[in-house]
Image (cartoon, rainbow, N blue to C red):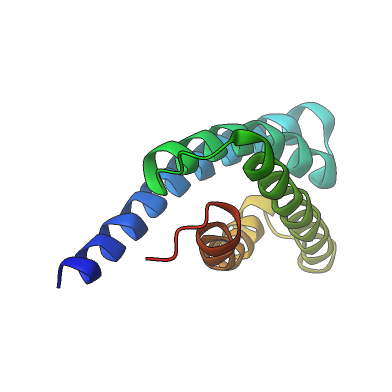
Length: 130
């Protein structure tokens, strides 16, 4: 029971950090859409900002990784870059097809990526195998 509760708490922390990061990402995404009028570049710029906050919170508060930052941050940003381009490409393509609000497209795309990222970060980046 204790092990299950520990996993549950870690996932709840991950969700909380992800919500904070998501709100930061959406805020900057909308700001950059307004300024530069490009879904693709707005996605990338917003992700750069939100990912740095997300890394620090996940490393220290969620997975409590006490290891060196260098290797973890390299792996983390490899994941961020991959996810960023997947998100930008999918949101941009769906936006060009559906012609609806880009934020409404971005939300479900990010939700799917969120689930994948939890396991990648837990197992490969922060080495938390509990």
